[in-house]
Length: 390
Image (tube, rainbow, N blue to C red):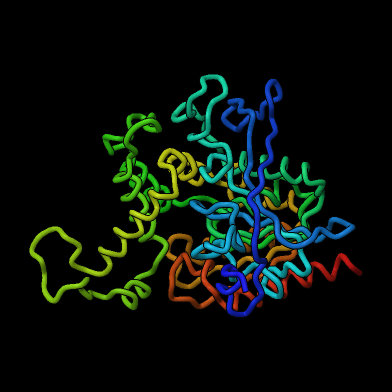
């Protein structure tokens, strides 16, 4: 048996997958962004799982969170250490059943995992964009995903699903292209980024720009701002966990020692863990992309387009059924923000279900294996799927 199969003891994996690329917006037909800047050509990295049926109406679009990518499930090779970031949810017989649905996941605009972003080569200069890359918004990301689906010949989405910044994309999709979206599943997310969320992102960004190697974003031919990016990741990682999760996982336990070092080494397990997470992150992510994507999340505010400030007018554009899910220990996007969303959706006259899942692991709970979440997603998708088959 192939090694990538043995990673999944139940055998219900999508198996070996391939990252694909789609390029569009070639000059002089560049995409016009919310900032009014023009950008092109644009390349989007994406993956697909399952089979598109003859009616092309079994499509589930998965939107990734802040530092995720298009690799949501399966393995690239037999030597991969781990599968895609949501392999516990996507696959044969799983919550998003690839025996039934055709699943698409794309890396966001501004990213660094194959999609056009600050580290991409600017065709006008032959050098990486760096800080000359235009600012992008969640709506801009959604526009590029729409272009990808047009390329794939898909004009209807059975459902959209995503957590955190992925949930922001879900909401933006449902109001930006209402005719395409039959249902939407925003997880652990919000209608607008809060002052708390903006504050943590700003501190993380300042850690990057304070690194002497950042060099105003022009570091691609020299030393990279690894320390700044590592600290930024450490800051972010704290917001993804909860007090209870940290207490259980680390407490005040020391790391490989019996007493304090009385220096600034990592005495505690939690210190060592954060340093490890930071060091691993710099191996796979670009500092400039982190700056741009966090800013896009900060700009997100559905109610900004709504004179009532409640979001009701915005959701009235949508035609989708909704399943909104929050988690009890998520203090980054706490449940009250999901409840505000549900109220706005209900007052818009739309069909919405809501569930707050008891979970101790904080914001990251939507990424972890959860029978409750899996069953909710599976049941909701089957209900929408059966409705269009009637």
